Amino acid sequence: MILTASGGAFRDVPKEELARKCVEEPEWVRAKATTHPNWDMGAKITVDSATMMNKGLEVIEAHYLFGADYDDIDVVIHPQVWGEKRMGIRG
Image (cartoon, rainbow, N blue to C red; front, top):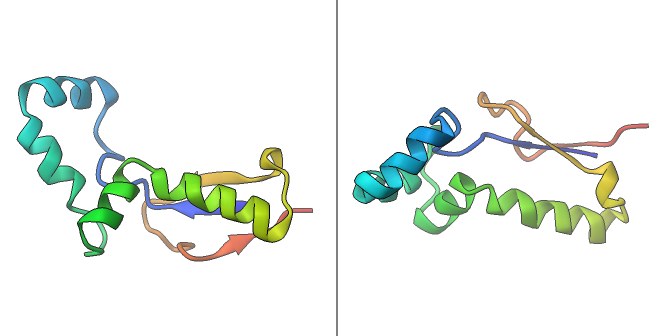
């Protein structure tokens, strides 16, 4: 099973830069976390997207709703979000 993700607000920020900004510019991080690169979803959902928490919940949902083993569920980042809200089942 393949779940797609846009990658959220931090998808193009190198982890070293994000770590530095967390210390030196926490307001930038807060503002960035609540600004989705593709659409306006509200602060809570946008933060979940930025941290990929929403995909963690979707993996759990896919496991329970479709009976998929966790090892059979992949999350793929697709910045153009062509597949957002779609699910693909392999094999």
